[in-house]
Length: 242
Length: 242
Image (cartoon, rainbow over all chains, first blue to last red; front, side, top):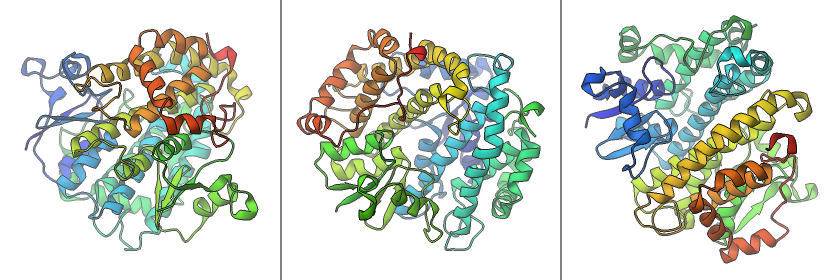
């Protein structure tokens, strides 16, 4: 099956969590909105699904994945679906639920990292909410990021398989997502994330191991990997880091 | 099996989405933190799981559910687990994924409704962030709430079974959650929600049908149903409504 991924062009965003799983396993996929408009790509490709009146099960927002006739939305839900098919999920039902629980906790962290620069509204420019952003950033750096990363560090520490991964002894989609979050936080908050990660040696090792996988490494060096930038979820505004 | 639900005492919060599913089906459960402290209840019951060092798969935050030896966190994940067991999930795999996708979209709406009164930090009082809250509330009332509710209204409209429910022709946990969100938005934003719901007759009908189910109605009149209040996710601050 050739999967079709639909996500905003120009940013890694939440689409990247899906891309990493597809890339690690060499799955065939088309990143539809990255095609030129004359080939059915661009934002129009997204809007066909978001605005069309004849789609029975419309997604609320990108990313969404088309697998045959099925359209699946919500990042963590896409990975819940793809994980077992790509061989990137734990084997048993309980393990899969645990992986999904952690993926949802990652989603919460990602939403909070986004809201640091957009605490009032995604519809306003950063510059229109910079005062609130400064206050939220302080809370994120001092409370939320350490709380989340400390939690994930403990999860690896308590993995009874004593592997570098979050669950069991082989890589899951969750590890790829976790590595992506570490990379994003390092981009957005170079100073604060370095401070927090001093207490998270297992997360650093997980990031390094995940991003050194041969296919992932090749992907990260390819032109398919977009650079972090300030239209994305993780943004670098020096005044929000400290 | 007797389920054990763990959630902050004194509020409906995210625990309520789980309670409604358990109540609708007459499932046996203990709301552990609502027990007196001398019977192992109170916040200490939560902290045993959140802070203990010997739990292999610790939850990040309440609510979490104990089912036998399994501990399951993240509201939508708990419902993903409980739905089929309680007979409150669609039958096929694709339907279950679609239900979960919508439940995650409800979770996003709930998080945004919370952040209206806490746009800067959950660790600060409302009064310390009231300026930012006013601005975020305007965006929520005018953009986000209409966008989310308009979307859910369309989902019911496109249900090919032409039932009052969101998926198929029988009630799922998703409908109970949706009804709870409508009730919460009406409590928090009586004026703005009335305005938005004028265009959502199907959501109003779904709310009324779900909350009129015999067991749910009995539950809502019981002392187990806590009242909405301003320590909760949905809060009524007149200055945030308009």
